[in-house]
Image 1: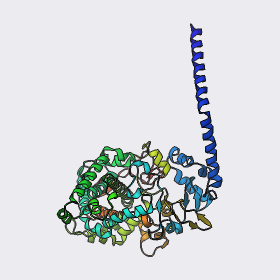
Image 2 (image 1 turned 180 degrees about the vertical axis):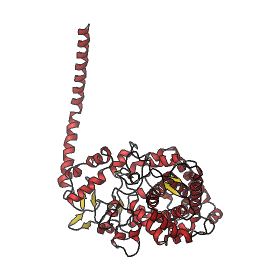
Image 3 (image 1 turned 90 degrees about the vertical axis):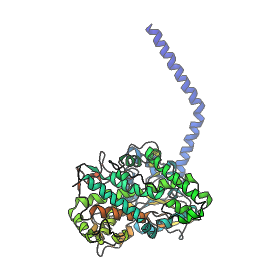
Image 4 (image 1 turned 45 degrees about the vertical axis):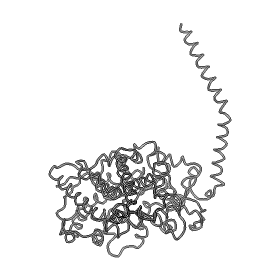
Length: 522
């Protein structure tokens, strides 16, 4: 009996072996062809590619898997590998088969130029997350210019001042909700609070309907969590609700465009009422495309500003001198709160508050995602449950028509060239003690190179569209929280390791297991 079983197993094994051999025989030519093709690609990239002569590790030049390995298997470490490359190879390096990175602040204005200087295309690895056709994911220079032109007036300083009452009302509610928490003694995850504040503002501007997350007992914790699980947030229920708000509002605005009377009465308080009243080409008015614009505005307008608040509030609470000096400066201008109030531009003119904002933005900049992280994040978001936005990775631009020149190097047209705000903002030659939060560095006579290297909103034709809106939220958020008589926040079991990034995965991440910025209100 046992012998029969062994014979049967042997027969099955031989059948399996024969089947594998037959399959191999069928696909052997294809495998051989693939091997030859792969070798040819590597040889081309190393020796014949237009970037073949640029410095950098040969493995990075040969394959994108090198970048993928450091970002995915090592957990968001390619930024630090790039810094190591710069130390070894110099200020200009080839970091993958197609892309260069330059670490030199004097070259920044060559890469990030105004629209009338030369054409600038976008290099992006985020095509697959559902925002194709939105402004930030428009690759072509001319199409980007057409799209951006319709939005820019709405986000000008003058227009943001017009919609400032929306921001002020949300800021007042923010302070009220925090003050109410003092009666309970509860521990507050402040990132949820600030995410609710910024999210309510941008949702109101996109859809004229606030989700009132700031009134929620947990400050819209589910919304915050789903949003920070990037890019799966674009498929999450909370985010789908936002898209429904926006889509309904866009369709309503389109219908009202047919009525001249309603159009004349319309104060265009939402971004889409405004852009639909412009000469936007008919092809650009597709509701689905505009809804993707709304999604982009929400992500850019909420998450990045929340990151700023987390960093700035933490360091302000940690240093009693910073906190007391800020409160003293706010005393006169906020004396009439909540009935008589300054404008955000008046708050901007307060020297110490202005210095705190600049220093906070130096720490917490916009967000960039590499192609390898984009590919991985489409499969998994397990690393992003505590995402804090800020530039760590480089941001790349393409000069499609003309070569760029850096020292002895000629960069061919069509080459993605990246630069990192993180590297510029942490350069010890420009910012002594770069990892120390020092608003005083921006007071009095300071090194003019600091402004040259300070690029939280980038520059050029594709700089941050919502910069003025971000400033208005930032100044009002800080003013209501740190004014004399405002909510008295105290750090709760939070230290610098909960704020300082150690991983670059979709943005800077703190230590594993961090619970973020937590406070109590007394």
